[in-house]
Length: 574
Image 1: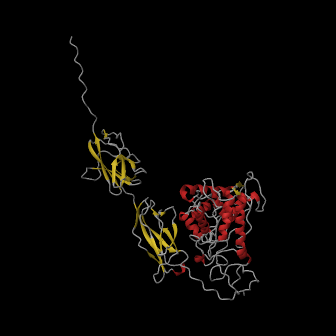
Image 2: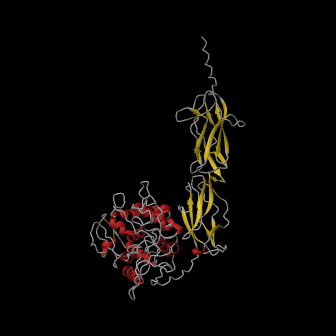
């Protein structure tokens, strides 16, 4: 986020050292070596922060402040009996308790991600660790029965005063602030992230960042994007840093993750403790002075760093008031002038199929030189249910040494028509590049009957058997393909017949053309029952699929066989 917002929220070096020492002590006090979960996977005790790990696509929270309290150094095992109360001080097993509704939301989110993105291996304990650090488990579980916080949980406004500068993106819809964005809810999403990452976790039809079920599920999907496998330490680190781009944040979340893995228990809603330490304590103690009249800055005390936000200039670099700010070194992102297409082919796919072509975008300077190590965000826009593989509508890719970013594979939904994929540079206000993609309807190239039973009927009766057909496309079953069934006059005259066999509509009236029919998942379609009027003879039922495949089925209406009965024996002679 440093390139995007011009500054990063960091704690002092002393705090970093304390956090690192506490993490080391925590690991040493709980279990030697590498720990594994119930599935034998390596867990967070091995996932130590790496100094070269960077965030993937900004931060869910806009790098907002967070709670810095670390877990106790003793393991929470054995867990106390359910309902046991702890002290308000963050010590011992009491800190392992998670409010009931909040804990339920984490576990439900894990279950949904296990089904929808099994390769992510999201543990609910990671959601619990982030929830602890972001909001103290929704302020100790102060939520109502459906999981919505009793009072809003808002971070400070991101106005550049010691924090990132993010001007309003939601008109105050979520945070009540129409000037600047603020992190919202138990998982502290900023509105611009919630706009695409939000989920409905409690099934009420609303995506509400203030609801712990919605927020937990959204956080799970956010952490599972980019193909990350959270059982892999490097992926785990990147996912956490994408939530808040701070090494101190990474240390703190990993500490709570390891702590919760050792054991936790449910406590009543509203009875949890709220952490006390905050990463913005310095900013809160030293607010930005009023601009009118401008306050003359005072030099810092000898040997003490100036609290609050770093001045303008190189992100994170303090300077002495009154001295000229150092000229920042341009980042690769700063040099991007525009995005150019990098040879993207025509983007077309049939509904339900993956697109065979991918979007390629190139970041270039004003002189046309390629720019590597730039994050390009691809966003699916328009009235479509097409997504990138994994179900996300947003994906971020870093350009390679040739300046090219290749978007993930698009997976076509069921809605047909055109939509747009927009490529933009993360952290740089350059005009985006739009790509048009098209989803066509499902088609079949052949259709066959599944039985060779003759379809016959007597005048005025009903056919005993129903016609069943199977649609095929390129040798495979063609599912969800539109089918039309028409009783035609003859093979040479495809107009609708006005006599002979017929279907019935919902009112029982005769109809001889059926539309809106669709093959099932096996490519099969069983037609409704057929009836006959008083006309006899052979008739044609024509089946037509999307894509132009046709099949003619013969129907026969004939009077019953009236072979004469044997003559009675002559009367015996007298």
